[in-house]
Image (tube, rainbow, N blue to C red; front, top):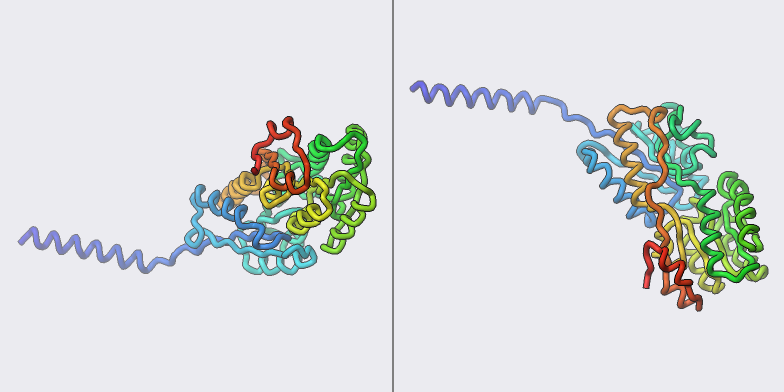
Length: 325
């Protein structure tokens, strides 16, 4: 009899605690916004790396977080509108890809922490690497020094004294600011350096017409969110012009470009996830030091080299992190 009473009492306790748990309000997932000028199709692997990084840090999508994404599809003029849409969702943190996206996110609201991938110091979004001091932090991937480094790698394919076209966008941080460093590097390499600027697909085609007229031996595509969006078009134009071209992101060589040198996008998006996680856990951007990429990749596409009739020097192949056969 006593045993039966004990079991009944335990059952009542369990039911009571279950009813109490059911009565509690479930914790709302926190929103993480991502704003980019890119097209959705070009962001699949990067976004997966970010999601993986968040999950590894205990933030499960659909349970702990909701990720809201806005793609501008290469149209930077759309960024302010898209930033306003994201701001209306009240995110806990905004991941803004590149300077124009950060500018739009900053203008959309006055408080939300921002994590960026770009040249944060040159853009004026942070005071210093060690202590950003504002509400923007993230990963700075050294675009200007890497532009010059890519020119140096391209020069190894070309005869001394060759002409090279450096293709940039006309935004202040991407084009004119980088070009002085490019010109200095070109002179030291014995190259004749030309510049072309593009912010529309038509202007990219005009740049390659100019490349033919100038009889350039190679094209160096400078760091630019817009030019990255249009990389498929640039690969096609370079193939039609039969001109060796080097690109900013390793994935571009995997997509059919001849050569690419730059940071691993997968690794950088893992870094961005680390920042987002710390902010969700209470850290302030002003106190989170800006990181730099941890891995750089040289990728060479020998299929494209054969189509262009180019022989890649063994010295370059031995240094490549990946050679596509």
